[in-house]
Image 1 (cartoon, helix red, strand yellow):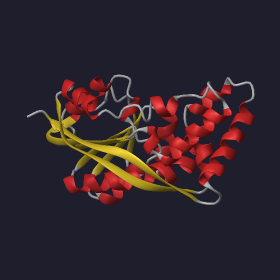
Image 2 (cartoon, helix red, strand yellow; image 1 turned 120 degrees about the vertical axis):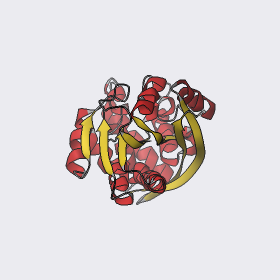
Image 3 (tube, rainbow, N blue to C red; image 1 turned 90 degrees about the vertical axis):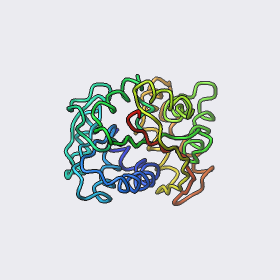
Length: 255
């Protein structure tokens, strides 16, 4: 999964938003940074470029992601860590950042409570989450293709998880439950460029939990081929471009 994620999804989906989040982090001029759900290090690299004097610790729950990320971006210190039980001392970081990871936390207030604990008193928590699936050109095209390939039985992972945490009031409530105040919120729409529709489809099919969901299908290879074909028909041949919307949040210790 890390290899497929890095090759097919990072360039098209994650690198544009990593540049945006890293630029926002640079404005805060942090000295110590903790990244949660770092994956293979797209944001990690952008942070190290944008804030070269900062000490960056990149963490992820998935051991395979940590191994891939540390090999790809050795300038950061990498740790396998559960966001709900962070292995760091109180007040250790000026900035905690998370790119498209909070949607996966089983208990968000608990994770946010850990963020609050490891943040210095004047520190900031900077993170983003995807907007509705309909506002993500690649994701919407993939889900449409999946539903055409397996009518009535398409995995709902994209809609329910990556694109299932879009209510700003809920985010503010979860942060408040952890003792954090929402200081700023902004919708950001950026364009992603994929090598091809087939590449993006392959990323979703093999670099996300959709892969496991399709394994139970009696004709999984045919389903994958149909999805690739449908996405190519929808997005066109050659390199493909799509607009994607995310929401960027900044939180801080409650005042």
